[in-house]
Image (cartoon, rainbow, N blue to C red; front, side, top):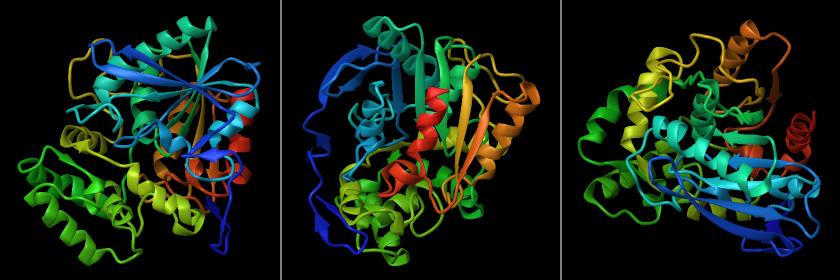
Length: 360
């Protein structure tokens, strides 16, 4: 079911548990280059795809299904209908993989190159296109600009790419509160809103419930504590239908403190930085021209309270300095961080831009 703008539930045609009945969904198991088991979900329609593969890469502490919310038309529906061979990646930041202590370095060095090679082997295609979001975007961009994804030719990136810029309160949280929290918990988990499992999680939930009154969904409120500044932080309530707002309760899980430590270092540096010596990676990702021929299309949700719009604007200016005229930037008024993929109006406001960039 989905809801109308007025809130009355209406039937969503062909939708069962977020999956279209006429979609063929094949799960592919493969290993990252360090041996961590990952999955790719291949989604095809009633007709065979007429275009090449496109991979969708989710953010941290969610999973590939974040691209299939209970709305009338998802980005997956849109891409399948346009003829693309659609692949949804569950990298190590997915809640379907299991809680792991990971960094963006791990995903950039081990997950994304292995996923692209697997898709190329399965499809026989010469190249892959990508639609990437949040920490799926940062890690994928790290891999691309380091030269580890030579067979990716288009990257549509949402919210943040190479320059993470946080709201002021988020900077305080990650700089001041994060080191203290890291001593008592290995991860944060928005799902504590529904089921705290440690003394710290009970305490965190209590603080959030006492200070965030924006809605009755405890996971939505915990998401804001975990990921940004604002009430809420990752979306605008007016952009979600009622069912999607409820659905998010099952779509968030553990995020390791090791990731937040790397984001802290990157924010301080003014660009993404590596925190390890993983093979093929750079120390800093915006000090030189990108080692990729892929064309970037940057989506900028103007009401983003997780990463400010300046994040994408800085990356675009960096790209334009090194290769003017190649890349593009698209501002999305009225949208928050994750709204471009889960909003009830994204099919009208966002998806045409994504299709245009993929089809150029």
